[in-house]
Amino acid sequence: MFAFSNFFLAPSLDVAYSELLKNKKNIILGGTSYLRMGNTSWNTAIDISNLNLNYIEEKDDFITIGSMTNFRDLETNHILNTYFGNIFNIALKDIIGVQFRKNVTAGATVFSKYGFSDLIPVLLALGTKIKLFAGGIVTLEDFLKETTVRQDILVEVLIPKIKTVCSFQTVRKSKTDYSIINLAICNNKNNISIAVGSRPGRAVLAKETMSILNNSDNLELSIIDALKHISEEISLDSNMRSSKVYRELLLTALLKKGIQEVLK
Image (cartoon, rainbow, N blue to C red):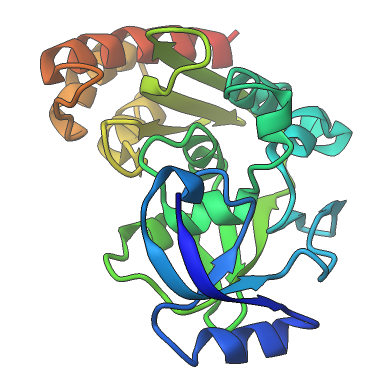
């Protein structure tokens, strides 16, 4: 269980950010579902739940998701389902249970860069950007590459508003367990993007494999080449859930299935 010395209910993002900068051991609270699994002690826990950051809105160029939006809302939202099919439902529906998903927030998951996340590969494959209070707008891909933890607040998740055919593939030991490996594939007018997560490690784009699929005149041959190449491109490893070799076999099989789904 995590612990903190002080609790601060922020009246605005400006005040929340000022409070965050006062001490390196201050923390912004999301849903706290995963914080509860650790034993870390914090100085001040800053609650931003009163700042109206729970929303999913359709704008001119992006679908904007407030950082306090919970997984259940992502799973059932009609805007997301209209533009991206049911990929959010498929990716999130097996995470523990409905009560848990009503507590986990999009912002906390993305900002924490959880390697086991089922949400992050989906966002990555969709070309998502994030809006930070102080840092402005950055691509999710660049944010995930950062090795240091920013003292900042994630305000919004920004998904390009383009109707896209998507597939989410995963293997778990049991229905509600963490993914052994997961894969999100999106096809936007024959431009395919692939994101791999639970490697174990932060989700990454398979750019070389994407290039093989997107820059070939012979689709059948490019698919064969992509299936051969992806395990060479994406760094996989072993942990308590799976061996590296098993992940490599799963990745190839899931990629084949996902490509078939987005090309139908």
